[in-house]
Structure formats: structure tokens, C-alpha cells
Length: 326
Ligand SMILES: [Zn+2]
Image (cartoon, rainbow, N blue to C red; front, side, top):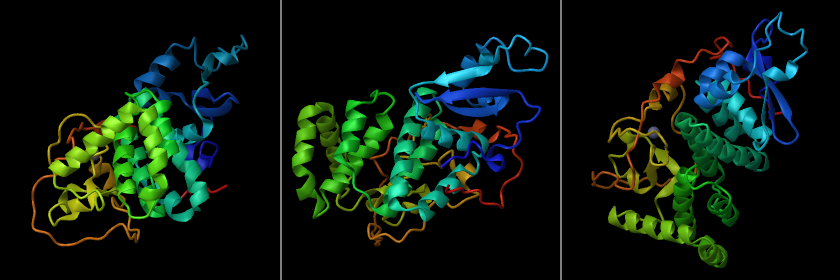
């Protein structure tokens, strides 16, 4: 899916200062508004400002077109498409992802999943916790929609190939998913041997898994029922729902503590549904009298209010869906 070449997504470049970003070994080219990219995070600000000069009229005589080119050789172009989508349509990112998850096939969705995971890691590298959280929400929704299990390959990737600091949230979620998968009646048997092998290769995975089970036991949660695909807004936790899903912020990266308060992203998401309305066999609500707080959650948070203050060059897109499946 390419959003970066859609005028409806990125608006008009004419007369604007632009930056060309080359992504991946194949150097897929993205032409983006310089200021918007600069303002998105320190990583781009520093890298772009370190360039000799923007491509302004009058300075092009030297033919130094390369001056305004930034190359990200080790990132994936399809992941960067998602970054561009977020950059220009951040208020609508959630809705775009909702549409993608609802309308494309499981196979197509697997490709998007891979890129969401890469986006989550990229957001860690460039220090954008708010973007990580959006990527995580979309991942959870996607797994819920297709009722995917945690695959040994995914675990091997986040424990074998990723920087532990960057992958800390993906690991936390992966472990919760693994517990849920392994405690499902039929799946445990199929995966057991592969997981044993993973535990041998990655002792940290085994340790994290043990810790997770301990935490679940402490909070009297049943790992067979507590589904990490299901994220619950705080106001949904009163009637025993917490036994069937995780608090919305459990796998989020925002930092300062919000305690039991609202997720800082809730305001920006209020424009669109926060809970996917998929019918899933995994979602089995039942009434239970227990208002004990969810101790499995870190309750760490940070108000990423700035996410809403960035002005995209693209106008008001609220009423139109620009989902492009080409
Ligand atoms: Zn949150």
C-alpha cells in the first residue's frame, strides 16, 4: 500500500520546501514537506538541519540536488509508507488502520502486520512513543480480527534480531500473547516443542515468560481467558472485563504515570471508535463482582499532546476515506 504518492494523503508539494528521503537498499524515494518532517521528531530535525541547504530557488545552480536527500538504508520502504501516513494524517491514522484491518485479506494483512512491527521499532529508534502506541493498538486489533496466534518466528525475531530496549513493548506483548496461545486448548500441543527450543535459545524469553505467568497469578488472572489482543479502555474495567482483556495502556509506551486515568491518546482517538467491534470467539464477557485494579499494567504514561498540534499541509480530510488498496 502506497500512501506517499497520493496527493489526497500528502497534499501539494508545489512551491514548498521539500526533502527527498530514500528508504531501504533499493532507495525508494519519498518526497515530503521539509518542515513537517523536521517537526515530527528530533531525529529528522537533526538529520535534515545537518544537510547543507534546502532545495530553495536560487540555490540550485550548483546542481547540488543531493543536498536535500536523506537516506535510511536499513529501514523498509513499506514501513516508511506507514510513517508517511502517520506524518500527514495522524489524527486519522487510527481510522485508516481500522479500514485496512476490516477490508483486506488475512494474507495482505500479514504484510501490513510486519510493517506495523517495523514501524513500532522505528518509532522507538526515533523516540516517538505516541507512534509506537498507535502501531501497537493496530497490531492488537489485527490479531483480534484474524484471531492469530503468537508465532515462534515472531518471538525469535523480537528476542534474536532486535535491540532489547527498542523491542521492550513488543516483547511484553509477545510474551502475553504466547501465554494466551499456549494455554489455548488445541494450540499448545502444536507449539510446545518449538517453544521449548526457543526457551533454550533465548533464556531471556523464558525468564520473561515465567515472570508474566507469575504476574498473572498474582492478579488472579486466568491466562486462558485474558486475551492480549483485546484492549480495554479504563472505563470498561469495572464489570469483570479485565479478566478477558488487557488494559488499553498495558502495552503502550507513554511514560509519565497516568495511574488509573485515561490514556493520553484517548482524546485524539475520541473522533474514531476506540474499540473495534469485531465479533470474536475470544471475547466472552461475563459478570463478576471484582473491582480490584489490574496489577498487570505498568500504568506508565506521558501526555503526548503535541501529536495533535502538528499542522499537516493537507486540509481537512475528515469525511472522506482515502484507503487505497492498490
Ligand atoms: Zn495508553
